Image 1 (cartoon, rainbow, N blue to C red):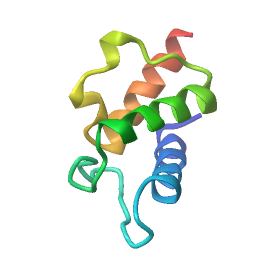
Image 2 (image 1 turned 90 degrees about the vertical axis):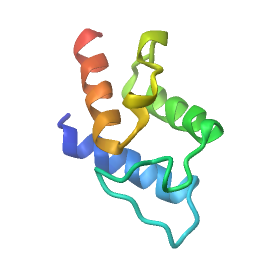
Image 3 (image 1 turned 120 degrees about the vertical axis):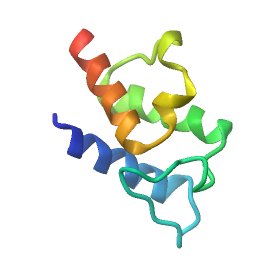
Image 4 (image 1 turned 60 degrees about the vertical axis):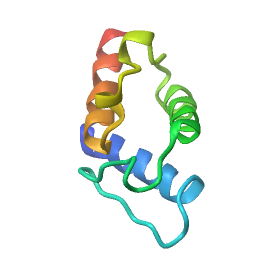
Length: 83
């Protein structure tokens, strides 16, 4: 699994299940600016844990890891390497 595939998977999930139909995001979009709130973050965490079979540990629950799809994908890759 490479970073671009993770970005694409998470982007598709967010655009389909969380954001309004006309809002599009890319790897460096600030997710908060796109309308992602704390409730949405919980949904994204659950998606990631189911999709990639990783647990997002408390030490990874920091704002900078959820700032963009790029930072989120790097966190997922790191967790995948640890498991």
